[in-house]
Length: 352
Image (cartoon, rainbow, N blue to C red; front, side, top):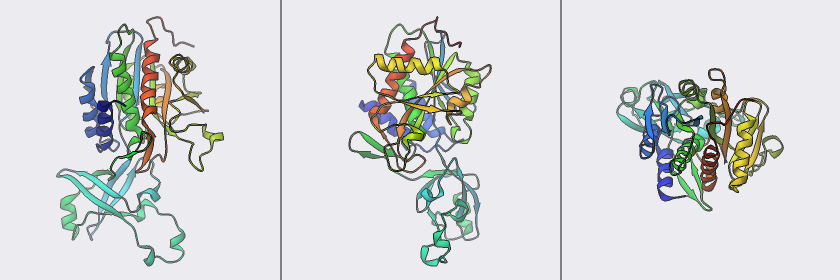
């Protein structure tokens, strides 16, 4: 991966952006996009970068920029901070983690606490943790000090640094789905370097996906595209316990994953596979019988319906502080999308 793209990716991953509070990563994304596209935002926090305005067909690319996190619900009389999860947490992952809370006075760091195993009854030691039995310790000596530091409604993310692994693999807390936000903008950059493109293409860093794909829904309504491609992560099945029979065969380094599903346009899915074959881009196929669990679900329902496709990147340990991807999978996903869109012209028909 080129150095500038890697710096952009790591900037996105480092910025805290719980669902509904995506200002920091959105700023990183917009700054990067402004060098080659027309950029704007909206009242929800979605970010848009457009190439070839007025072209045909109109294509939307969507990768959500939010991440799962926590929100403060109460500060108790001992100065301990209680919270709920924002998005789909496995509470076991949260035990013992460090947290970065975004507050009106800046960032406050704390640690997630739990009753020590020595203090538990034998039966309690067998039980899995629940978020309501955990708390955040921000080091306050009492309730008054804690309430000066944080307020109910403040949000936070896991405090975890990016880790570069061998074989161009990378571990980080927010690869779901800064990966998608990165890929759609990289695809747009590649298109900007080509001449003669017919399509108007808008890349969207959508918000609030982890709580209902809200940003993709509003963006699609506003853009009213002829076609759309959502980009997200999918489960890498090259780890113990991941069923290839149920989820398909997707390994790190095997390339982008193209989904075929009841809610997706076969015209786009087939077109993506054809583009991959022409470009000699390795890929795998994922099948969904119904909803895909991505922005594509919201987009294809917009207005009178939008022909939609889905490209994913294999991701290990999803919704954890240490998700893992391989960088060339991201690069090849962006190249695949750019090649496919470059093949479209004003006569391309998405009606079926």
